[in-house]
Amino acid sequence: MYQLKIGSIPLPKLYIVEDKAEVKKCRSLGIPFLIKPSGWSDEKLIKAVLWRTLVNKFPHIDWTNTLKINPYDLNQLEVVEVASCHETNPGLEGGSSDDNLYTTMDDGYRVRDGGLDHEVDLAEKRSSIDNYIGDLGYYVSIEELQSLKLLPVFLDDITNAIKTNLSNTVYMDGYNKKLECNLGSWYGSEQAPNLIILDTSGSIPRGVAGTMVTLIDTLRNQANADLIITSWCSKYYKANEDLPSPDELAGMIGGMNECSQFYRILRQHILGKHWGNVIVFGDSDAPDDSRFHRYAKQRIKDRELQTTKIDRIMAFDTYRERVPGYGLWATAASPKAPIEYNWRWTSCMK
Image (cartoon, rainbow, N blue to C red; front, side, top):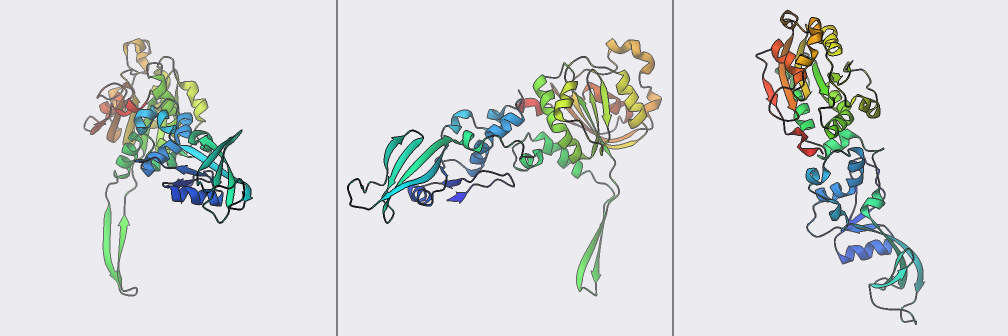
């Protein structure tokens, strides 16, 4: 028997029990409990407990396939809240030695527990785990859900790749006579800044765009990245600049692509610099598509790209293995930059 705790999430008091002896102890102490289904792991139990929070926070993610759990599994989880009603002396009329005598009440059940020194009538109120825990979205951070391995793995793929992208690392070892031990020093050159480009136009599945505007602030903070969001308009945010709320960013979902604002952002903030990683989410739509030919005078020239250096391109296309259209300028600027493709990242989304 143990009290359920998940990181720093403020859960209501709940004890997990696995046998009749633990059930009897919870009843005697008057504490709420849940009988863990046979064969369930702690990991599966945590997923079930946070089910409503995840579904409400990210409604466009297919949680049944992502977590390998479904609403029918939740029906196996029933929380029992216990309260003492009254006591009777054993052997008196109305007493019973049956440890599990139930009678129906308006708000649940009454259990007569004769395993104590004297019998106690216990009022039990039963509710589903979903109703008992409720929606904890206000208290649960995306970072905590990520640390619990409950969010799509492509977030970890990006942040882990960037964390290992340090260059010119030096480790100097030496013996310190005063402290009588070996001490080492680590020196690393400043990592080149990163850039994320997110296409949320009408050709991007709405569930994908909706999920990404919810996750993008966490992702760009973990990557320490500047951000361009593009759809019917294009906006640029520096790495240390506050983003609008996800609800406000959702206003950029849908509509046609554009190129003039995007090219202006490239010229003013991106070109001529050294970027560690350029991370692009989108599809084949590109700012130099034929429908933008009337803006030909605004198109990026090859000579404008020559002073831009990119160490790596991470391509997250919604349909196949390719660099999304709004990242093609990066391949032209650094044709030798290695490209990491991921086109299965949307498989968890509706």
